[in-house]
View 1 (cartoon, rainbow, N blue to C red):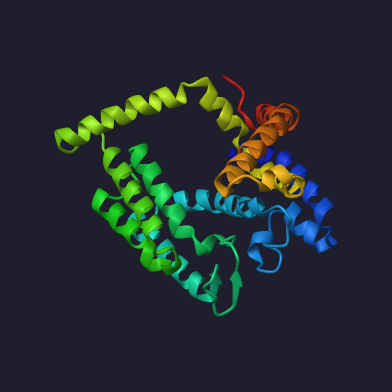
View 2: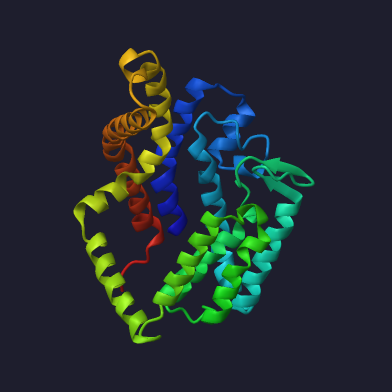
Length: 290
């Protein structure tokens, strides 16, 4: 039921965005097949052919969904710390064989890390945070989890810069704050503030609405930006503005127009897709009550 829910939540709108992208750059049958099956991220040739750049991460997401259940099953038979360390080693080897960005590999190079083994260690960090948040018995000790997180810049040197290290430090702090009732009073006080803040955020209707629209914003904003760019480029008043004001104007205009589109697609495409997924689960995969 997990796969069915994710498929009908993502695929309907993803297919619409993909077919819109074909309007800008038509491709061959094999190209279309790769994108309809989410397999394009496995190949350096297909992964960057789309005219909608944000789609690169969707194939990575689908690969993660396929692999994750097997990781959790493996946690029953292998110590999680050893398993996650093996994932870090796999990422290190993959980055040597297939590079991405400005770092070529021995067998090829991806522009974005669309191949899951290239950044599996980053997903492991998310799994570790989730295990500690859920207080799972499969969660390694706090020291081991922090050590595994510290391996990330060593496994993937191209991420070794100040911004990533800052994010990694923030994740480590989050991990510390997830320790229920542990640590000095200062940590417990921060955790209480964090819980109150999250309760307010998750209970806010506007935040929930923005979360519902987030996927549509992600897949459609590129099209809107491409459409508005040429229009603004020929306007004399636009060129009279300073560069920061040009950037602000384009950003606000893109957000407003994209959200108007997303409001329609969410109600006509995404919500019916979610409903259909639930209907299939209720009809065929949910055991009847005794």
